[in-house]
Amino acid sequence: MKNYRYVLLASIITVLNALPVNAGTRAIVEVEVIKGDSAEKSYEIITVDDTRGRIDLVGEDRKITGETSYIMTVDGGENWVMGDKPKDRFYCSEVKTDEFFMSLGDQVTNAVEFFNVKAESPTVKLVFEEPGPDIMGFKTTHVRLETNATAYAWFLFFKFEYSIKIVDDLWYAADVEIHPIRRKWLNALTQSGNKLIDQAFTDYTSKFSGPIIKSESVMDITNVRKKTTKTEKQRTIITDIKEMKQDELDKIFVMPECEKMDDDEIQEKGKALFSAGKIML
Image 1 (cartoon, rainbow, N blue to C red):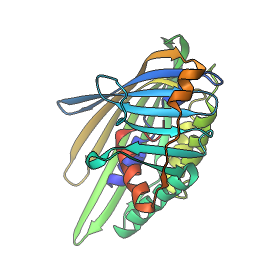
Image 2 (tube, rainbow, N blue to C red):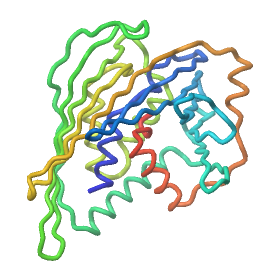
Image 3 (cartoon, rainbow, N blue to C red):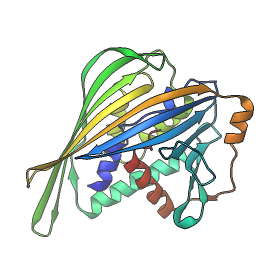
């Protein structure tokens, strides 16, 4: 059930696609997650040009150092480098986009089969679509989407049943072209090999036609047997955008020496990125 939650969370946040094509641009994105009385903010610094993209996962000081975790591509999203610093040792690993999502799809499939989980295909409904305000100089359209899913499993003599409801408010720029790197990720997300994942993302992304500038989401996870519900809220917005010079970009997009990720590393990184809402870029 936890992996399934990661998959649904991945559909909430999209930020890289809001940046213009054929331009060197840097954006700062603020992400706020609210669980009960606890609220946590994080920031991402996103840099992109026509074929390169990088996300630095920074703290509240929004400073990039040699130990800042990041995700980067220099070939239009065909391959990605993931840099991290576990246990006081910085390392990076390289992975192909298609292989990454296929591995995650296999992971979800195996977990569902192992725990004998029965799940219905998520439904995504367009609640409304209306003109939105200008945000960061972009004319937006406001849509509200409602995603519902149910799943249950038997363990010994007990039945565990959950329902998930996600309400997303999205403000997208219909007049802005989606970045080619973003398109690569969208295609990979809908071709993981897991029918539930592929159908959910296909249905979700068909409900809006442009890059998302701002999102606000409320997710309710209900334990049907216990009749208890946990609610998580998430908000994402681009707070700053600026153009970048060519020499600045060349310093940012420097490929390190990396080893290819093995399957265990892919699964570990995938879980972390899904849970943090980073996987959709």
